[in-house]
Amino acid sequence: MAISAAIGTPLETCLAQAVDANPALKDAAAVIAAVARSAVEISERIGRGALGGDLAAAGDHNSDGDVQKALDVIAHESVTAALRGAPVAEVASEEAEEVMRLNPDAPLAVAIDPLDGSSNIGVNMAVGMIFGIRPSIKDPANPLASFTTPGSTQIAAGFVTYGPATALILTLGEGTQSYVLDRAEGTFKLTSPAMSVPASTKEFAINASNARHWDAPVKAYIEDCQRGTEGPRDKDYNMRWLASLVADIQRVLTRGGVFLYPGDARKNYARGRLRLLYEVAPVAMLVEQAGGAATDGQTRILDLVANGIHERAPLVCGSTEEVACVATYYAGGKPDAGRSPLFGQRGLMRS
Ligand SMILES: O=P(O)(O)OC[C@H]1O[C@](O)(COP(=O)(O)O)[C@@H](O)[C@@H]1O
Ligand SMILES: [Mg+2]
Ligand SMILES: [Mg+2]
Image (cartoon, rainbow, N blue to C red; front, side):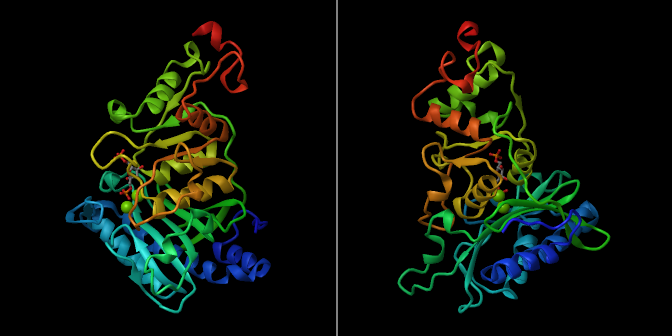
C-alpha cells in the first residue's frame, strides 16, 4: 500500500499501518524491521570510522572473487543474525557461496548485499545494504527454487545508504518511500512517502574508465550525451559516478538521472558487474515503484530470472525517457533528431 503517514512517522508505525491495510505483508514487515535493526548497528559502526578499527582490512575472497573487507563480513554477520529472528527460510547473500538455510518452515526468502559499495570502505564515502524479499518456495527437487523466479515476484525491496545521513529506501509493492535514521533515537523516520523519478534528465552515471570495453550501443549513447548541445541529444549532460550503487540510485530516485552498469568486453563482465538477485532486481523494483524504468538493454529487469544466486545482470535504470533512449541504441537505432520528441527540435541542424 502507499504510505499516508506524516513526515517524521517512525518506520515501525508505517509498517504497522501497511500491515493493517494488507495483512499479507505481516511477515515482510517483520523482515524489514529486522533489517533496519541491523542497519542501525552498522550505521553506528561506520560512523565511528577508523576509531572502530580498520573496517577496510582485507580478508578472504567472496563467491564472486572480490576480496572481502572487514566491514563486508561484519555487515553479513549482523544482518544474517537479525534475519534468524525473522520469518525467513533462506538467505542468498553476496558474502556466502551457497544459500543459507535459517528457519525451514518460514514463509520468506531474502536476497541480500550486506555491504554495497565496498571500494568506498575506509575512505569516508557512502556505502550501503540492499535486500529483496520473496516468497520461500519449498521444492525439495530444486534448492534454489525461491530465487529462480522473476524479480516481479519480490514482495518488498529496499536499500540502506550509509552516507552523510543513514537512509532507508523501501517499497512494499506500492510506491517507494524514504526514511532517515534519527541517530538520537536509533529509529528510522519517514522523510518521503512517495519518491518520484522525473521522466527526463541531463545526468548520467557510468564508470567511464571502462569506455574502451563497452559495446557499440553504449559507446554511441555516451558519446552522444558528451556531445551535448552539439549532438543529437541537444542538451548538455552532467556525469556522476560514486562507485556505490545505493548512493547513485538514491540520487536518481531523488532528482532523476540514468544509471548504467552494462555488460562489457572484460573477462567475466559480459553481464556487467552487478548481481541480479541482491542488487539489480531490488533496485529495479524501487525505481519502477517510483515511476522510473529498469532494463538490461533489451528486457525489463523484473522479468529476468536468475539461474544461480550470484548471477550478474546489466542494469540501465532511472528516468523513463532516458532509459527508453538507451534501449533505442541497444535496438540498433540512433536518435532521429528531426522526428523524435526525445531528441530536441534543433538536433538535426546542429549535428
Ligand atoms: O568499481 P566499479 O566497476 O565502478 O563498480 C562499482 C559498483 O560495484 C559495486 O560496488 C558492487 O557492489 P559490492 O561493493 O557490493 O560488490 C556497486 O556498489 C557499484 O555501483
Ligand atoms: Mg553491491
Ligand atoms: Mg557487497
